[in-house]
Picture 1 (cartoon, rainbow, N blue to C red):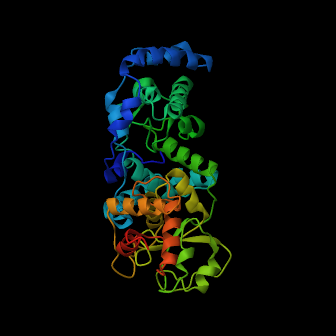
Picture 2 (spheres, rainbow, N blue to C red):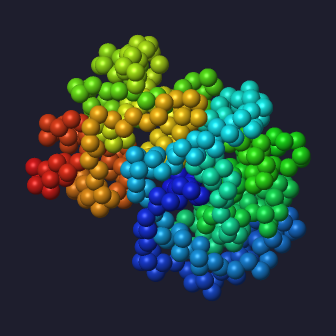
Picture 3 (cartoon, rainbow, N blue to C red):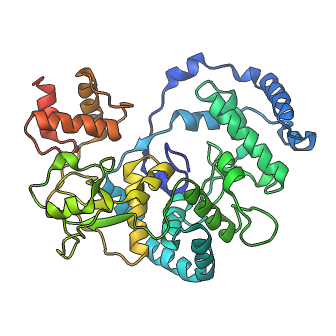
Length: 401
């Protein structure tokens, strides 16, 4: 459930972005045993018992974890590519079967936490293929290695402390704590801190088991979503059709307008019926520009972005949930969609940064800052300002206009 990329099946959309130069300033692995002794003292001072700390005895530095961290990539597929791959007919069928299998569990969860079953099942499917792909690295070893490393030691040291707290509470034993390289655990890939804070015992067996227990896993995910602001009974995403003459510069997940605004400008549902002209706030999401799929994103969609910052991932997860809730298949838009490659998108970010725009990390992934900068230049060039990069925009930026 990390913001950079989730483990499990969604890792299929990664591309390598290794940076060997980073390792040059990092400590030698030879210093790991001494560091581990110091960490044990720190953990003991925070109340971790000697018995739990013994789980760290004999732990060794893991170069494979560092290699995976250095090669951490980015979402390299478009929304249509990723959603087509992840929201397959088989996954819709499997998700529907699980909704029926655990119908009583989902009913109880929604009553307690306000989160519908389809929302949970969609995350479940994308994170770990419904618990089938959870990772198999030793969580304590991975977290200790990353805590010793030079990139984000404070972040991972906190997670390692919480992993020990999960063990001390009796939720999992050290051998049971296995997952991907960044220490996520369980069927929803909770980081140890979230595991400790939001895991619940929903099956009543006295343990918060997010590895083997589907009820515990589902209810814990719902507990987390509720804690970050999920609104019960409210929509999250709706497919729509858009006209040719929208105020495109208002189309972004970060820009919320009353639904009446979109109705006034000709936005309809897929059947051509105008969207309700009420005050429900909604942002217009165009993950592939004005010719591609179009969605109204409601406040609950912002909770998806708290789960994972990638707009490709979150739009896919939210769309998948609408399908599981009985919604229509994906409408791919009104025309052919131009998709730039990662290198070209990075070049656009670089050219925008040279012009003084704040674009965030230059990695080919379009966050809110990059989309804002693109819209600004589209307005300058008299182009439809939908915040989506095109070859024409790149050509103009390279021309220095």
